[in-house]
Image 1 (cartoon, rainbow, N blue to C red):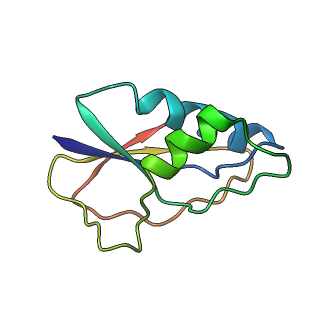
Image 2 (cartoon, one colour):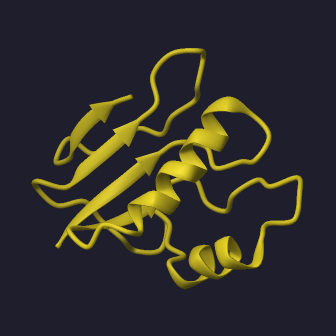
Length: 97
């Protein structure tokens, strides 16, 4: 199974963060990839609904927990609007959104 890294902020209060959070939650539905958020933990201003909370807790992972990219892993990165993204390994295939 390939890893699919998400290079998005995860928030509930601004554009890229809301998009990144929703994209990550939808990614958990695909059995072909293991979604991994690089920016962890999320920055939520409002309480998260119980279903989302359980999904995030059950799939909690971050770049700093010993996960490493392998050849062929994918990275979804936000581009534009002054979004701050993490540097990525050259092993990954970076897909700009």
